[in-house]
Image (cartoon, rainbow, N blue to C red; front, side, top):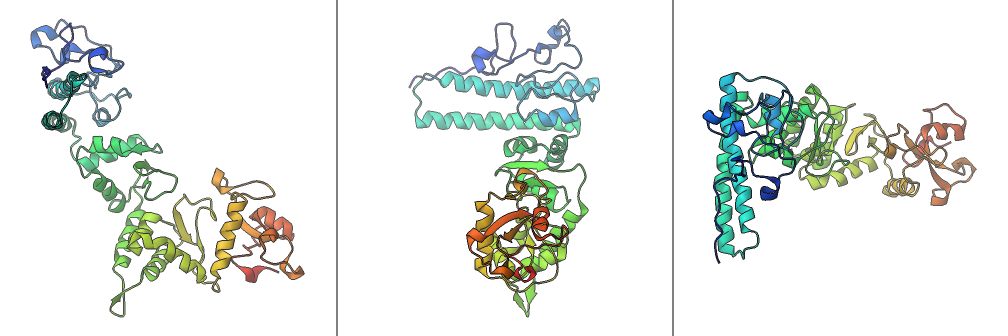
Length: 400
């Protein structure tokens, strides 16, 4: 195969090391030659107005770069950066590091473009990947130099800073991997959550987030969360009469320990260990009469969170009754058949199962005799005050 020549850096007709859109494919390119040209030329270049910013890979930061801004350079470019001003010497060091980092990325893009239209063999591709590895390594070293100037050293602190810039917004694993700059970025996220109590949710902890998505809920660490994780660690190794306690026992003890707070599925899976035991053990506890509620029972809970409604154990429930309850809820689309309110739509309604023909009048548990009601409508059906009714399948003893 004929090998295409590969330039060390992409340069356009003006001597700009940031290649044009047609050459490299980076859209919305705006040049900043003073970062890359020799000092003798940089004095003649007109300075860009304050507050402007660039979307070119090699010129990703404004002239006065910010610590927050550098955290953002490794996510999709073009987001607004903040306004901390570097000292002149610091600006020069940042510019030199960015020139190196940008040159490596532009060379990678030019390298890959040079291969287009050419037959590529497995051996050729391995050589390309090796070259990409060398260039990416140089890029990361340059990025570390910027971090040292801006004080954004440490993967954990960078990840936390980035999450705090995006409170309440879902960020992806690719963003956090780029900001962290290390292969073990996911461990740093977990350390922030488990050891320091930062309320970071993910697809592992919440059912409404996809795998690889993360969300910081608040700008302050939660002391209860850190404490709950310490309790989880202790209970996970819990023993009874010299032997390790069963997963069901550990789950119950943990839910009691954090009561009345909730636990997410990551915490419960960690305590149950192995994690796949969690759903079955929770179901067994419910069958034994422990009042374990989820977001379908309590809309204040996020999807994937569970808590004990009471430390009192009710009479054991038949597995068929629990299965039947979820069958009725699913049939009615988890909504009150009278008013239509549903926790699935962010409503605060709490749902209960009601017998159309009252039990004392001969009603049974046939699906045609069961409907889903919110607590308000259920109270209306029985002509009692709100809060006096109970789920008639989960607590049949409350039916009169």
